[in-house]
Length: 610
Image (cartoon, rainbow, N blue to C red; front, side):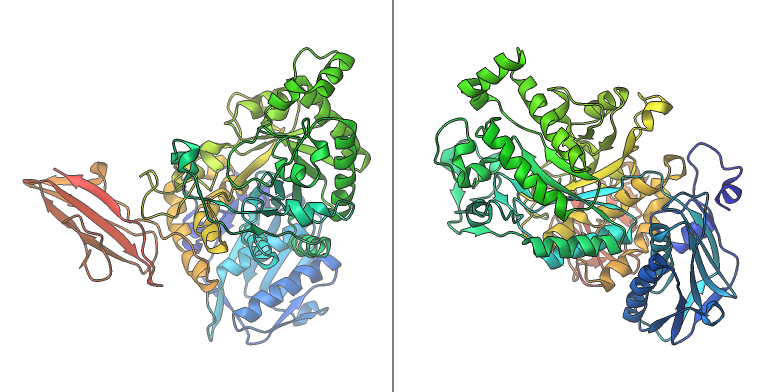
């Protein structure tokens, strides 16, 4: 069916079908037709499901329908059901699906559970965001499948710790928009977050720091300016909690990739086990950010430690991948270490960087014996890697391109396009944004990213597994701040990961994204309200001695409020209606904000008119 619906599509980007636009689906499906009409669900819904995957998806769908005021039950009678889930061989791959809504009801067909689940997520977007007396589903025929196998997002819980319930909610965010990989950054200099039964001091000592740096470290000129909050901080997940989260993700067809940092970002390990260092301690779990020169020494006790740790980690996480970090590992201590010099002499290394490559390959061999694949940040290329290692390209695309040319699998996650801890306002450290690490990553720069570098041949591009967005949390201290940084940018990430580049259009994406805000409101997600569009020099129209602007909001039902005197607009200032005419005979600052239906305001769009 997919091939038939896609027949005749041009290779170049084009606007989506009007039907797809009207439905407001994110990410954009491959092929949509929407004939006139709608199917009205009864007050009590029956869902047909027989196989284990069908029943799993049906139970999840039942819970979601109940939240909309439509109680549902499972049935094994196809004739009695209004929603039917069916597993059948399909050309659309393991995650593809077909969704048909017509006078006979709703039919979702897929090769397996993942496809059924994604079809159910699309169905939910066709339903009202909030409970209502009538629930009508528009007639559609959708054939869909993802562009990439790896569609990921990372959450750093080391710098700041997040409870199990929020980790589950984060997984829900990914699953709702068809992302299938949760990269869980569990260890770093500032905290070790996973219980390892053989090494209890990791949760007694390494999971806690004495205090935390206050303010933007990157703006301080000297350590004398550093100030700390004086409050002990920490936390960890028990193995029972890890299993609980893993099971939660599995039901939603999300694979968890645990990250256990080595050999760098390991000072928290040394705080508990200083004998693993190249020089005597004591050490303390780090209280600031950045890169620490104190890293584990690549000696036999260190290998035994990480092999023991990974033995427990591999038993907890059934997914195929384990991430070992491998980034930002200064070699100052290794260069000073007699033990490392002996390793270099014995192995015939003339460069200390090769010691890390040797370290990584030895860890990879151990992981392979456990049935796991090694993933590391792109620094693992510098010491040499095996052909089976997977590279996560974060320092731009260069490392990923090099790795793909060598035949290694690659996940594209460049800072320039997918670091969603970066700011969302062009003004550095804007007073209208929460404290953040810096950088500027607007929605359009994420959306327009193509994970397939043009420098690669089609054969080499097959090694690009897909994209991943990263949420580092040095300055993101609460679940509410995570949500603010995540939404609506996660919607752009989902379309980068799911929809082929040839079908993407930023201008067409924006109104579809706008239709998602009511759903975010219904789930009480603390999204960032986008600024009004149209207040910029390129958008102004000169009419005599005036500049005329036409403003618009991306949030349906929102108001736009503005000021001309440089003050911050709010609910009491002038309301934008059709156009805004500004005199050109004097300098003035125009500011406009979006006031969303929920009462929350955007940061101001600003323009100096002169």
